[in-house]
Length: 329
Image (tube, rainbow, N blue to C red; front, side, top):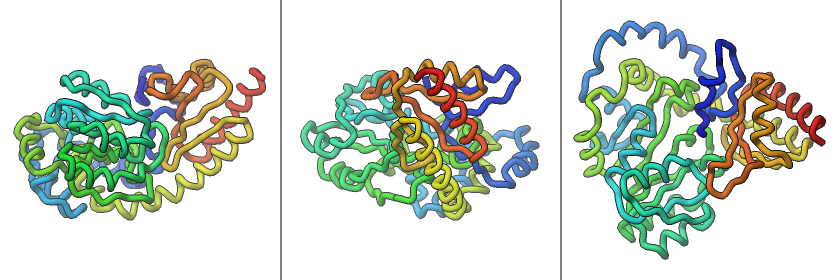
């Protein structure tokens, strides 16, 4: 189960979706902009995407020949595993799709705890290492990622750093050798539009463009990216301030209910005394969806993940958690 379950529970009604880790504070002009460009879906995007590449390159100071983009960052992650095989080191707990792709494309998986990933990379001589930073589902920034980047060059392995949630973190890493992938549509709060981008080492970026679908990014996603990527630095700073206030509120209230919570970004990994599936079922009856975490290696049936949302939504979650705890204590 991913954080993509909201659609099947809608049934014509609106639910509070705490399962999806997206920004509850999108740009105020976003929907009007999307409406204003909706006529463009009558046309194919130009398949070279030269204007999109230029926008990404100029915004982040990346070489144009390193730029990649896709139908969500998941397309870029999948391509990494297509282009890299052999022994892949995947720390846990982390995003479950890494292992799925590694298995699908014939890699041999070696696991380690997230805190041990640097030492493990030194010892086991992997062909590839994958790190989610900030990590999903724990929400923590992986402090050793720059050291891993240097080690990748020294040891000759390829390092994938999935920065899908980097805009929600005040911490940043300077990476010279890594395959870096990011998501724009999480910070904009529109994951259904699907847009990911990043940079690969030049020879791999060239190979990516040789094998990608000719129109892998739809016209609306391309136009949204061109408009909002240059504004991302200032916009994400404002979002982080709002998220920080709401995260503190949630953690304080969760602590009062004897739930343990961790996370530095726009979501929290939570553990309580109850089975998360029972809690999920109870909350669904109240129109609230959470993400259970028993499918993450290293987590258990008492773990669940919640997105940080606006105050009214957060209050609704806490209120119903209080009812659940009272009824089950």
